[in-house]
Image (cartoon, rainbow, N blue to C red; front, side):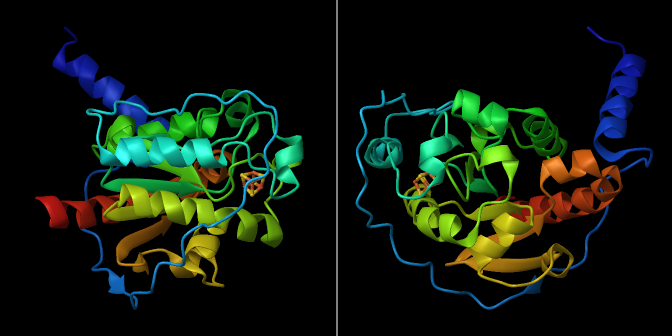
Length: 254
Ligand code: SF4
């Protein structure tokens, strides 16, 4: 068993990796500014083009019991996993539905799959995904207890930002996932996820440190982990955002 000194050293190394040279501790965060609740947009009622591709099994991690949510989500996956409704369907390797606990209280929403995700069919598995896992652990969430999905389910070529038509075509699938999972809190990762899900034309900076609503679900905005890898200076703000998010969670479940 590691000594107390060794544990402290390892903890500091993780903090340094996550947040750069600043030493962080849990701090009080500002009271959230509450925005008006909005209706959750309508369900996805889309006709899916079929193709002869092999259907991959639904990636569910740590699904503790066979239950209604699991079954509904698996059924929905089967309905949409061969989608070719927008041009991204033609260039993808794998359809990236989402991963995690179908009973999750917390849902994380990113922009779209990257190369690693396109390869494996699972969101947030590359370097950004590893950083996301560490961020979750830093606020005492296990990756397996949350649900992670993206605005678009297929990788935009060259990791470009999905265009408005691709987003508009694909986002009903995310709304349906939210409707099935019924999370109590959503964390939007990055501008594209936030702008698309919240239907707000604001900068990330303007959307941070506030409580937004997707339907009646409290939603918080922070940086995409890939952006943090490109610009470590944003890690401090991300840390404030995720503490704020954890505080909201604790207020609901403490
Ligand atoms: S990005 Fe969405 S809408 Fe476009 S093909 Fe993939 S699943 Fe279908």
